[in-house]
Structure formats: structure tokens, C-alpha cells
Amino acid sequence: MGIFDKLFGALKKTKEGLSTKLRMLFAKNKLGNEFYEELEEILISADVSVTTAEEVVERVKERAIAEKLKDENYAISILREVLTGMLEEAEVEDLNYPCVIMLVGVNGVGKTTTVGKLAHYFLSKGKTVTVAAADTFRAAASEQLAVWAERAKVRIVKHEEGSDAAAVIFDAVSSVKARKTDVLIIDTAGRLHVKDNLMNELRKMDRVVEREFPDADYVKLLVLDATTGQNAVNQARVFDEAISLDGLIITKLDGTAKGGFVFSLADELTLPVMFAGVGEKMSDLEKFDSKAFVDGIL
Image 1: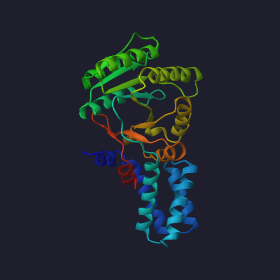
Image 2 (image 1 turned 90 degrees about the horizontal axis):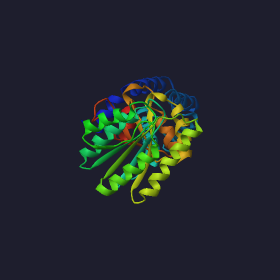
Image 3 (image 1 turned 120 degrees about the horizontal axis):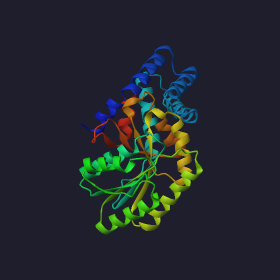
Image 4 (image 1 turned 90 degrees about the vertical axis):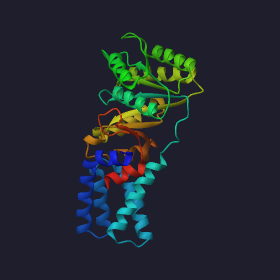
């Protein structure tokens, strides 16, 4: 099963909500001011921010007026192109090796599980992988990661509970450099984006990677629960200000009917989704595909 098939299944709830509303809109309204106002409302109901919804509708309106469109199918195709283009504007180039991937985010979004799935993903691409248990705060966090590391059959670097998280990262970087490992994936403690002391700790860990492994392709990815909705944009903005995020991993796409915040993150913060969680299995994490995502919701 490819990314399109998995995403299509995971986005079923979002698609059902949007498609129904769009069909009703076209049934009662011709393209005009009332139509565009309601289209904006429909996008907002799918958790697209007001700012981004206005931008999307403006782009659709400009195309429709320029091309003198009144046909429903063609209008939908323009909406599809506008949404896909918005996501593609934020896309980044593929990773180079060696690479370091640090996962950050609030509590409960599935970071540790995502580390295991990411490890499996890179192994399937023929890469060597080490994971670092830099969540030294949560009880048994390193043991949980060790279980995922064992499932994925990758090395793990960990310290005792309560240890300095930056020291774990220092040791992990030293290890992967010595062994010439392709990928280092760092699990960090969940932290509320409004807690300054926790964000300062994150900055410290960030500095260790940059200082100790300047030759690596280093990306910092915010893990977001798809059911979070619009609050995801606020979370992303604070984490981005703290450590300059490179992208996102969206988990639990199969559990939401509101995947629209992804467009707001691309439009307002230029943050691309790099991977998407589309199920609970080890293999249910895929490289994000903008076109497949849009096709999956319209």
C-alpha cells in the first residue's frame, strides 16, 4: 500500500466533511460573493485558520475570474491546485546523510512512538540508525523507547532517569560519529510551549547538536497530534521561535475530521509536513505527499 492509499484511508473523516459541504455549496450557490464567503467558512470549519482561508479563497477567486469559470468541477480543480501549491511552497529538499532528527512537542502527541516508526522507515531505506533517549524527565521514558528500538532493531543511547538531556545527546552524537551511522533520531521530553525553562533546555540540546556535529544534515521536527486542530499553529509558532523548526510530523491523521491546520502551518509559518502517521503499525509512517494529502480531503 502506497502513501496515497494510506493517506486516503487516514483522511476519510476529513474528506467526508469537506466533500459534503462543498457539494451543498455548489448545489445552492453560483460563483459569486456569497459563494466565496461560504467557501471561506467551510475551510475554517475544517480547521484552516481565518488568515489562510482568506488567502486560499482569494487565490481561487482570482483564477476563477480570470478564466471566467462557472463550472463546479473546474472550480474544485482550482481549489485543489491552490491547496497543493500552498503545501508545496513550504516543502524542503530530501535529507542528506549523515543526518540528525530531533523530535520536539508537547506531552502526549506520540513522539516516542514516532521515533520507533521513523527508525523503521530509515531502515527500510537501507540506512543505519541510532536513537537517543533524551527524554530523561518522564518516568520509564527511556525504557519505552528501548522497546521501540528493539522492535526496530536499532541501537539506543540512554542515561539514567533524571540525567542531563544534553549529555545524552552529546554521547549519542559521539557514538554515531565514531560508528559512521547514517541517522540519529533524538527523542525529547514533552514540554508545554508556554514553559520558558523547558524551552531553554530545548535550546541547550539544540546547541549541542549544532556544535558537536556541524557536518550532519540537522532537522528539528515538531510532532503534532492531528486532532489538536488550530492550537497546533500556536504550538508551532512558539517552538519555531525557540529553536527554528525545519518541519513537522503529523500523527493520528486517521482520528480527525479536521486536517486543515496543515495548510495554515505551511502558509503562515512556511513549515512543511515531512512525515505523516497514518495508523498504529510500525510501518504506518510515511513521507508526506502534498498532492496525495489534498486529493485525500477533496
